[in-house]
Image (cartoon, rainbow, N blue to C red; front, side, top):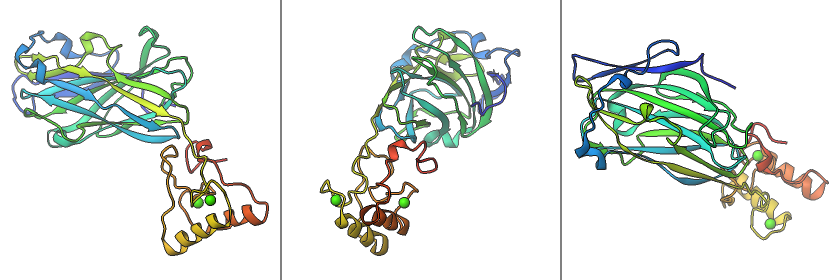
Length: 317
Ligand SMILES: [Ca+2]
Ligand SMILES: [Ca+2]
């Protein structure tokens, strides 16, 4: 489902008279003016290339319809008046589904940015960077979400291009992510990458060092690889960890719900959820005590499997 309005493209216009901020970026219709960066003279600032980098975090997450925050670190050894960072979020394993995304920023950018301009597009297939078709959106907000299930093709993709409107960004590197990509993944294991492989050089990374003189740096890029590990909540309800569901687990749960201690264990492969939420309604409370009691003594249903929720806990069997 598309959450963004009709197709737009980012247009970034250099401010010809000011130093800070030097660039205005605005969304315009796809039929309107093209990215003015394309018209800039390509003056590569060779001395700064090695220390200018955009690096996307790699990580392993557990499947199960959860939000994953992926850091995008920006390093610049020159003062920047503007930048454009296109990101392609591509499933490289069939079935490694991503069902929504959002972008936000922080760190050094908080003090120099006013908003993000985002335009995104998606591929039907991208095994050879083919099937690229215009997408949707171009909305200036600090955080914005886009939802498009990329499960309909063997290798799906979603393309994000982000334009930044900044005051000058002084040289430095972020110790905290300067941009976050928030991804909601479903319960299907696999791998996806955040890359620029399918993005044409004409729309590639740009660090602009002088907007007035149209000087830009082409920073290096480090892609991020996100592995989605299988969801495993097989130990749900076994609060004392002895691989048996019995009255001792009920006693454990009662102690926690009414006494606050000991805290039930949480399994690494079972995201966000400890073993005590046996009814999958979110959290541990008296209803879980009743539920587990009914299972043990009144032929009630077995503890739920949170891996079957999409998402947990609002849509569980
Ligand atoms: Ca047990
Ligand atoms: Ca519960």
